[in-house]
Length: 624
Image 1 (tube, rainbow, N blue to C red):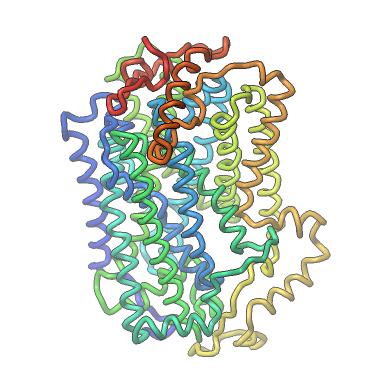
Image 2: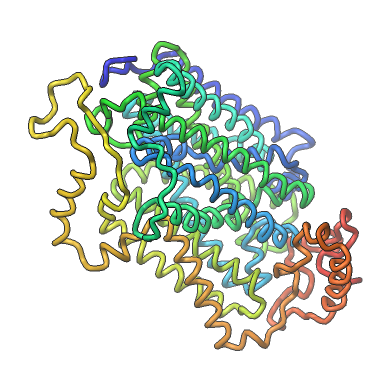
């Protein structure tokens, strides 16, 4: 292992490995641009012709989840705060079950391309427009940062050219998204998830060899208090505890897997509802595997640097640089392997950005073009879809440039991404669970939920929670081989004692709300947004006559959507199903709905498309 602070730099082999990853991604895009006759319709381009199967979609969902933020941030999180982050394995299970059993059946039954089409069917055009605009803003903000932030971290540690990497990844990503559509996005994700696993594995295997086996790593982690899996402190102010991860994490990630266009678009592109559900459950295995890799990498990092923390010793300037520092440190004698890790991080970037570009193109075409230009042919819509993909790719690259000038606002923009997700989850939940909620109630709930969520989120940025709330672990520099450290610095100082000093300095400068409302765990931002949106939406609907309206049951979650009831209660299921068919005829869509039992002008909504050949039943419960 290298002397701390002297870890070398990238070689030609490392750049070749990175270039190879970009080249293969571009080739996949070219292949799907022409395979099977090309992308002739917007449905082919945006939804892969609704012919995808479970496994590639599952890997694509996993790859999109695993952005460079995960590759660089999660190991550093475990290194600094311990392995409690692994409790997210339980959270992911809840998220996948809720998404597949609650939200997926409704979206898949309606055959929608954009999730925001549902908002018009269930409420009205204005609610749909608000939801679409919120999604576009949060996605562009987040995507620009996802491109820039890891590039900056890798540049500062490895010397990897900052803007060369930003432009190269942005251009290649835009290229294969524009040419190949959803199929290219999914299959490049499959390739990239392999690169990500290989990059993680190279670091973990080499660290195990350097440390003399897995047992020393676990011993060091145990005696360094990093194996802190269980903390049942109920305080919502603690950054990570069992309850914040389980409750807050479930709300946060359900907002992504359950209703976010970037994820939903992939699994409703599957050729059957069975494949759609299977893609989510297979994806769960992928999430567990990636979480295990990230946590193990963090523990290995602690074992390697337990006596000389590179961050405290100022060898790196930010925690997200720790993982690339470790990779370059322990892999420097193996040409190409540091490049493999960088390709791993950028694969996370590509998979997230490509999903975002494709989702942005989908919502733009379906929510902003089709409803207002109904005479456009499918060929023209296909070209418009490709044009919007290209445009959004350019915008995201430009946003990455803007992110470089934002400085301290980077974290704020990332938090806004989470703050918008909660109210949107609440909005969709109002539509799916509560038949009496009307468009006025939904709109009021969304705006109030977003306002409260924005208030606490921005407050947390202006007055960050004191470090004591995150319970940072002990980091030592007593084993470092250097003499330039400030003489006033105590080498074995634990971070909690530094925290006490900060606490004393800041107590007089902070408003009352700073140490309670603004100090909520970031995982509760989405929870607050969702719950307030639902509560206000229900109250506003009841006060504005929501009980008087009748809603098409296709827009609601019903017992018919739970497949396991057919197995557990076959006789009761048959009686219920017959009752539903009779009652379905008595339900009418409210008078204000401009699309009586026909969906929208999207071809996926006509009666022929809504006929399910698998189950031999009308999806909307209305006989011709």
